[in-house]
Image 1 (tube, rainbow, N blue to C red):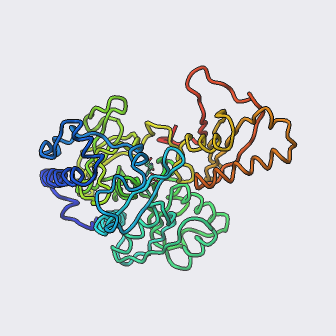
Image 2 (cartoon, rainbow, N blue to C red):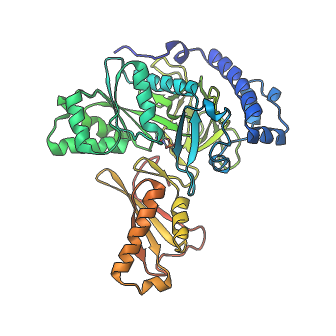
Image 3 (tube, rainbow, N blue to C red):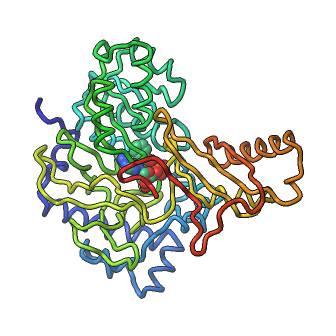
Length: 439
Ligand code: DLL
């Protein structure tokens, strides 16, 4: 099958052209944030920089990093580079404690996002004849709206199913003739298992491809999904802070994700020192937005560990490819596609009057992630009746659900029963054997 492109000219541009576009757009973006975002201006001034010091990509390393904590410090709109009257959409994602982090989009930002999502869809062979079944969550999470926008821009038929209600997913796959499935890889596995249980032969469906991301998954999982659903399974990467899904996208070669370099510059750094390291070496991935109007974050530290591959790709695209994230340089977990920081759980426990003695267990049972939290009771609670303890567990579960957006099983355990650490507390035990999974 001939390779399909959405914007062939730029997707296959020469490296010189890409570099020239990046340099010009970087200069413009740096000026934009310097003029419109006070924290950026201050930080650049502290580093002794003016926009004139950034003449091209070769000067990028001079600029200070942006980190998740910055979004928290300037919550909600303090890093927006345009007045809120020009913001047409907000999305959000987990922060490290109680508050979510918020990002905004202008209409132009959404148009760019639609284009890069359409690039992803074309890269997996889709066109206007396809039915794109979007089972990523719609809402503040970027997954649903991201792929939906791409499908509509492409002229395909978007089916905004959102996540959950797996029986209904199967009915829609069967009745609406979905050809491309978009969801997390673990949900794809779950849908596949459900088909099997229901005795539905995937060959009777019209599905041909899947676009899966938002959480780590392995090559073994890819094979299993491809067999279970009788499709080709493609990886997609992105993060709320930079845009959402499709910051980078896999092509027919299924060998790494092409970074949309006309919109984002990728760097790899040593997570301990912040030093830039050469392409081809493992490090933390850092992105700079060079076309965004509302939230053009500069040198945003993703905390995702990966490698950038500059080898030419057989698909004809010239954008560099990034590997699957191989882990993180922080303690963020992704549970059922939702980002969870242990510190968020701790915030709830302390607020509810518990001690910070707890342990988090994550596992994967029947292709679904489980989250169990063991929390020590206080001495005075210990003498409570089983009924009271149960009620307290339920109260904590409700608080956690409300903050994290996913459910957790809470078990209150005896005081002093959680092993104390001699050094750094080991609060998380992740039993999912995810190559490239989170710690
Ligand atoms: O997960 C955006 C997205 C939606 C990507 C749908 C792909 C598909 P956040 O919720 O902000 O955004 O989470 C971003 O998820 O830093 C990675 O750690 C992880 N992640 C995203 N894609 C992948 C992937 C969306 N393909 C965080 N493989 C990122 C592994 C991924 N991890």
